[in-house]
Length: 495
Image (cartoon, rainbow, N blue to C red; front, side, top):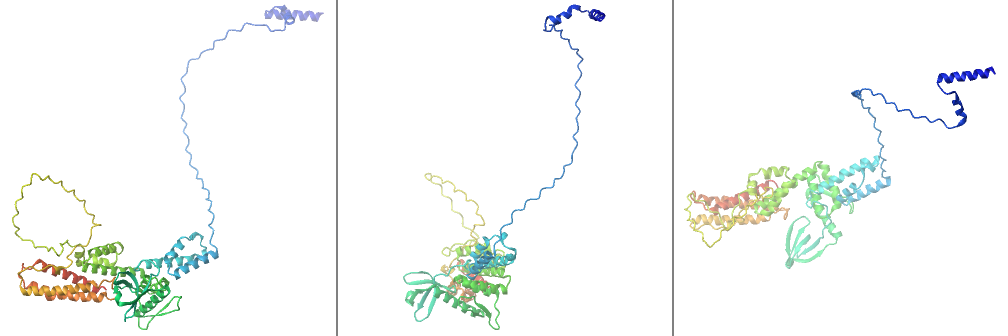
């Protein structure tokens, strides 16, 4: 009982201190809902004075040294597949066959289509030797007359009445004549009435004729030819004879002109054996021949042919000794090439009178004639396309002397004209292309008659005339004869 009383008294004292109603305990039993209290007013937050934003500090980024990264090793490409032994044997066999037949271009094309990366190491040296050999043969064949290896041309046998036969290449024919070129390179014609029969040759017989002529050419040069048909010939020098590399090349050129290509490798090998610098030797020799042809065309006043030959020399042989010394620096040749243009012989150049006659007064223009528009100015001529060869009098002897000259002068000039015309006949036959064997003899005869024309006729005729009284037609004769004599003399020295 006392404990209950103490509990009640304690509860009452607690409510007093808490200032609560002691009967509030009954509310615990009256309802289970919580007491709703008015929400307390929101408290106003205390505002602090605004502070300035702090200045951001710049942080320096430390420099870092780039770290060298070792590149990854490249993956090697797969090694190319090498040619097999059988493939290399087929390649070398094909090259040997091309070279044996003189088909140098085809051998070069076969080498181009072969991959060097696929050549086995043990065959690389032999392959390189084939490359050098084929390249040398192709360089030499370009210096021949044809410039390429040709098939054997069609050959014809001409049987001459009571005079043997000719083996020729027919160039053309008409009703009365046949124009031909012999296998040695001589061009000519023959009348049909001089022949018994003209018949084409089978290639086998044509090859036999070319081979026979090759042996004759070798004999002239001091060589003995040995060998069986279908096999390479062996060449042996006769006792006391020495054949140069250039002479062997000339034999090869003969074979190349006539399509005997199977003879070329052995001849080229013999030539290279005697002259390792054969290509330069042949290049200079061909320049010499072209200079000779140029001098011939200049001496007969063949302007178009001389221009073509001069252009060829400039294009391919400008650096040769023959072109530099015999054309570019030769005063007579330069005068013939680039001298002043002269009027044709039918219109001789009159000498200038120191006191020209007074000019006639200009007639007044007709009012009915409309003024002509000025001609458009021509563009400057390109020196590289200008024709270098000057036009000269084709035949100075066609211009008659003026009347009233002394009879002795007329007689001397008439005799000189006969010498001049005879010299021109021999000069026309000294074309090295048309007459490769005897052009030098014809050129020598032409020089003799030109010298006679000047020394025995034209010069004495000038001496009989007073100073200032020499007609222009006689001066033209002297100038043309002197120039052509000089050109013939240059050809005879350099043949």
